[in-house]
Image (tube, protein in one colour):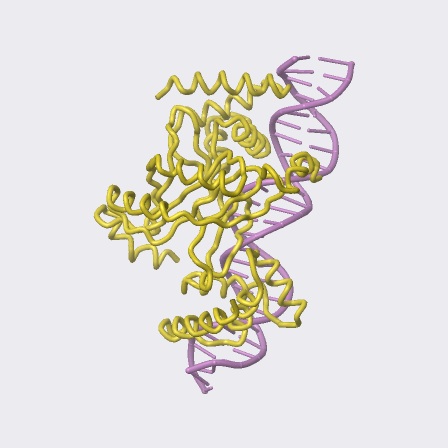
Amino acid sequence: MHQSKEEARKVFLAFLAKQNYRKTQERFTILDEIYDSGEHFDAETLYEILKEKNSRVSRATVYNTLGLLEESGLVVKHQFGSNVALYEKAIGYRQHDHLVCLDCRKITEFCDPRLGNIQNKVEELLKYQITNHSLIFYGHCTQTACVHKTAAHEKQD
Amino acid sequence: MHQSKEEARKVFLAFLAKQNYRKTQERFTILDEIYDSGEHFDAETLYEILKEKNSRVSRATVYNTLGLLEESGLVVKHQFGSNVALYEKAIGYRQHDHLVCLDCRKITEFCDPRLGNIQNKVEELLKYQITNHSLIFYGHCTQTACVHKTAAHEKQD
DNA sequence: CTCGGTGCAAAGCTTTTGCATCCGC
DNA sequence: GCGGATGCAAAAGCTTTGCACCGAG
């Protein structure tokens, strides 16, 4: 899944050019970090990681760049119930939705094409042009190790 | 839709009794305010409204009570893309999901039973017990007055 | 050289917390 | 009266902003 980084760079370059935005080192440092690592992350964690790697990017630039990446469709922003926004790379990954475990906060991905049917019906019925969506199921694992945490999350003090 | 307030009170009373929580004036003041007014609201606005009505409830109590109402299923919490949590009463209202206009931020409700099928399949496939969900479509109106705001939200500086 | 982008730190906003006081039980 | 709940204000956590400096075009 590494060639997606190259593709992401191309997309980002095109986006920046089109918008007459500058192609700064920092923007590509951030894009690379996101596409090199996996999973969901929040802005602060990304900032910490970059700082550890001695990239001198500031929080302001991290937030700014995440905004640009979201605009260009390279990154998707999620709010999984908490107040922190989590981000996730958007290409090299097929369209999917999320299932969040209320006990251990683990995030699982799934995909069901029938959601497309629902979207089409809503678009037609309500006369909207839908550009994106967020579907999150919340629940409890019933067979993994997570079950043990059902009590644990109560005393996470 | 006013008798739902009475029902809500009963449900809340039962919940508080079961959990051995106290039945304070403030908690019912907040519940009433929520069930008397409509639509989606955030904690701060609710606090402001109560303050205007000379109810001496504090922010702390508003947040605390919203938590209890959420626990008891009388209120649902949403994150419609921004950092503010919006709440909405949950009984007297049939199950529904939301469509958010990216131009004017208007929130429209819809309902599609097929989502239940998706939920069932996810539960079965991933072995989860799903307790609730959030489905939000984001898009643009194509025929209401909102269309005019497509440009407006660009210059909201 | 210009001016958009960056770094830093401070401010802003929503939400949470600590502690003295209050009131449901 | 006891101990949970409240009010107030301060603190915490995420995100945005102001300003001086830097570097892409």
